[in-house]
Image 1 (cartoon, one colour):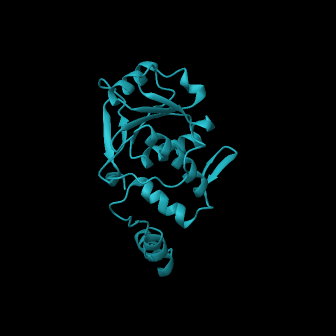
Image 2 (cartoon, helix red, strand yellow):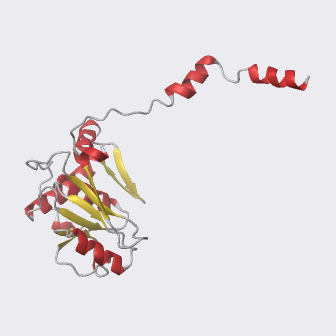
Length: 207
């Protein structure tokens, strides 16, 4: 009798057919067909054009729309280009989680360079090794963090120093020869088995 009751329970459907299809098929149709051959910032610029006034990033009480974020990133990019940054150059960025950090990351990509993220909480020895090993041409940071960064021959720019970027153009920079096969970032392993190792990734691979 118990076995028959278990069989009966197993045969009673908990969901109607349309509900089952919605849960198993409709809600799982999450694949996105990204256009191939585009850079990461190229995809971002498409989004800017589609919804310029939508909120793109929020940090505490502050927020930027896609258009505002794009403008700030473009100014960072133009400043980097002014300093001679070219595709596959490395630009290190050491910043607290903030609107500045996001604009800086996008600005590096828009200039054609690859970003090298430096966590401000890392020990000085690790930061020094990463700076020496990645050999960035420029370091983007914030005033409060500048003194704690190890010495480097790279040019240092402060993301929270408005006068350094406010006079730059706001249009999307056009970097000749920049394609999806160029370097997007260099991120370092934990170094638990020795020295940290820089792992390189291209725009196309991320997309």
